[in-house]
Length: 219
Image (cartoon, rainbow, N blue to C red; front, side, top):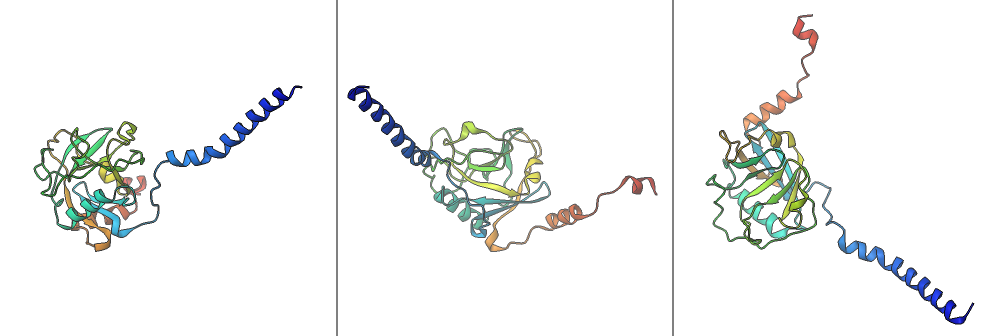
């Protein structure tokens, strides 16, 4: 074997070792943004819905700090109380946050600069609504019924439903719905705002034992 052949094989081997060493670092740059798993009451949005219960949403300030801060500010101002879900598409999402109920309104605060990130739009993902321009999110947001990966890195995902998704599923469909569901009350978990009476009653009913066939037949 000639020296040139040996040198060529050694070069290929060294390049292969170098590529293997660099691949973990390259993978880290494209990995999805991590989302916190532990409960964080200061960054947990609580929605009491007219569909009969309480929805908790863990927000992610590490990946969308300005959007999370906006939601917290508006929530503590009572902005979302009584606001309807004005655009609800079956198999896609439920959108709220417009006090006009038309999809054309917002808060008096300035629009936000986009904070697009790698968090995927899965079932229960909460993301900010906007116009066709990227830096136009203001107060409206939507909750995904089903995964919609085409929205990834095009809309600012800022949270995920951690409980009460069944009450999201029960939101009235329509654009707009004939009888729209509403956010009765929105709060931040750290503020310990009590749920409305109807939500407490719904929780009590949900905890009751199911009716059996024997009970129905009088046995």
